Every structure is written in structure tokens, then in C-alpha cells.
Amino acid sequence: MRGAAPAAIASSAPGRICLFGEHQDYLGLPVIAMAIDLRIELRGRRRDDGDATLRIELPDLGRRDAFNPNEEPVYRHGRDYLPAAANVLRRLGLSWPAGYDIRVTSRIPINSGASSSSALQVAWVGFLLAAAGDARATDPLFVAEIAFQSEVAEFGSPGGMMDQFSTALGGMIYLETRPPYRVERLPARDWALIILAIALVWTSEFINTALEAVVDLASPQQHRLARVGKDVGAAAVLIAAISSALIGFLLLGPPLWARIGAFFLQRHK
Image (cartoon, rainbow, N blue to C red):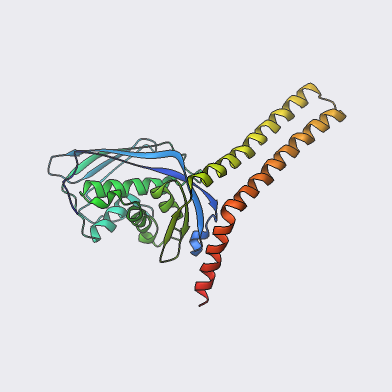
């Protein structure tokens, strides 16, 4: 389904963290990932000058880019992801009737393990689909698949699809990364309990660190009570960590092991 190119387009995607199976998607194994409340945003305004060139400003990187998505460009480097997405979509029959002036901004830290590059690719694919008047711009599974094809498969790079699917779908998901792919959104209640457990560990660690600093300030010399205070603080962190691990095991363990078992049974049939 095709429509007219919108006068203005806004597209965004969040970063993500991996809760289970970091890099297991490279091996086609199941993973659990969760989107975070830090996003990359693309805002573009259509130009009516008869030129379909996309002019892209990336102030966070101090870069500018421009290319015509209706023409197949020569990749300038091994991670030329923006034109790669247009190439993948053009091979599916898409074309772009107008050009856009686009600005990209991000709150996702670069090289932090939060998948800023995949978030950019997901938001970019959504933008390209909207600019082509394609209704699939609102289909997160299609957007994720194209983002994976253009970021990983197009360059023959090693990589899984956890990043693209988790940023496209948002929330917390369980993803089977071997065809036929299957995605399941995990309940909001489980999500809230896992976040609470993670916050409990971090909070107890911060309190323990503050306690150690206060004890060192009040008692620079070795003292039996100072040692007791530090030991109790460390024990609180240990209890919080064990409790969080148990929460994760009780919530995620049964469905995860069932699916992993089913996965290996299918492989050995």
C-alpha cells in the first residue's frame, strides 16, 4: 500500500539492554532483551524541488551525508548503513518521489553497548518507508527485518538480530533468532519486577559504597566496629544480588528453559 510522501516525518527508536543471552543470537539461540528510555530521533521535512536526494545532518557525530535513494550508490565504507537500507528497500520495489532535509539526534551513548547503531538503523528504515508512502512503516517486525538485512546481511557481517528486533518492538521481548523467527512480548508485571530487582542491587551497592566512605572518614584507623559496619553493608549487597537472581530465575527460567529445550529437540529431529 502506497500513499503520498508526507510533508514532515518523525521517526525514533530506543536503545536496548540484553537480559539473557548476550551474543547468543549470533548462534541462532534464544535471547531476552529490553528497550531503554533513551532514544534516537530523525526529523525530516520534504523538499519540493524535484530532487529526491536525502540530505542528512548528524550533529552528534559532526557529520553530514547525502545520497539519492533511487540510485544504487557505491558503498563508501564497510558500515555505510544509511544507503544500504535504501538499497534493500529499492530491491523490494520501493521508490522515493521527493527528497528530504533530515536531522538526526540521539540520547543513546555511542559505544556503550546500548545498540545506538541499530536504533539508528531501525529509525532510518521507518523513515524511508514513510517517505516512500509505504504503510509498512508502522509494522515493527518488517522494520526490524529490513534493519537487520541492511545492517548485517548486506555487508556479510557476523551478527544477530536481537538489537534490531528489540529496538523496533520496544518493551521486553523473548526472541527466537533462528527461522522461523518468533517474538513474544513478556508481561508488564514481569518487566516491572525485573526492573525493581535490578534497581535493588544498584541501590544497595550505592548505599554500601556511601557507608564505606563514611566509615573511612569517621574511623581512619582500623576498628572492630568499622569492620562490622562494612561487613554488614557488603552482606546487604550480596542478599540483594541473590534475591534479584532468584526473581529472574523464577520469572524467566521456566519459559526460557522450555523454549530452549524445544529448540534443541527440533534441531535433533
